[in-house]
Image (cartoon, rainbow, N blue to C red; front, side):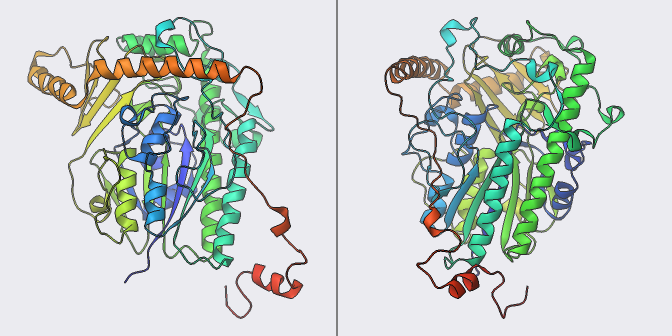
Length: 507
């Protein structure tokens, strides 16, 4: 029987696909470029909810946000929801997480056997939106400070976090190589870059010149506005600060620098994988939780289903497992769990403990053609009712009960400039898509469930902040009595065990 493959999943935060050279962009990412050249590049890959926590929970569970209550960035991820970590552990894998996953609630592991760092974001209900009071902007919402204050720096909160994340993950690979646990591993390394604020150390800022930074392709004035975009602009404070052209360029330059920082960290992990002699049988995945509009259509960050916010990279490299190719069929984060489950079960169909909304991509990885459909939901801040999306063939359909429909032909109109929902020539397709939405979703019921969840969480959060507060934030446990030189083991034995490669084995 073939040796089970290891999985190294490298996740970036708010990384839009179009910035990468593998997807036609101009960021400077030599390590990702090399990985893409030898791997499988999914050209039409999407998140299922363009917001951090709901997207990540769907990625882990293979289920849509509304199915598991993952409505927004303060929604609890239920401990009874099986995740890819649970399935892989059941199949005999050791599972570890380093970095961000934005778990909300008291369960901070969700199937991961080991978690190497804390999270960069809070685990409580404090960031719960309130659709009943849309006009009031809570202090935790995005603001335009990220754009108007963009530029170079020495250190940031995010640099501190990601440096720790990559250091801990790199050390974990060497611990696996030196350890006695012979189970295959799944290690998820989740960075917070290139998420705003748009501030990067000087060496990354200086990798680019202003002349290399393209302006947004689509200005706000060039396309008809839609109600949801207006709401998102309100949420991010565009009515309070309007960035200048110079500030927009600085933000986009800093974002490119942050993408290059991510590329360097990918290189650190790939080098460690090689040095730990784990490269031969490890499948590497690079993906993101959602994208960033970067000023396109006058929008920033995410919270919508335009391409900049919801189209993300998926690069899968497994020399000896898959040949280099590009896949055009649409796919999404929902598909990662069934893909890993099939690969981790030796190609056998896994038995799931919950409904799965995604599909396995093993066929595409092996070169077979497929017809994919991507479905998405947005239920967070900036909305006042559910927003859903269907992406099939070259069409994208966006629907909300409170807004006019949007239909785009991405083949003819990749910048989504022309809404075809009112085009008589598309009336039949539009009717079919509206019927599919009605079949897939009970939007009235979802709306009611979101409102009820928000009300419960506001009440619970307010109560828990009275008196003594017990946080849910993950606390990494480090047992110093088991590190380095201690008297419970002979010094020579310890030094020999810690040395890699072992004496007598060539590197």
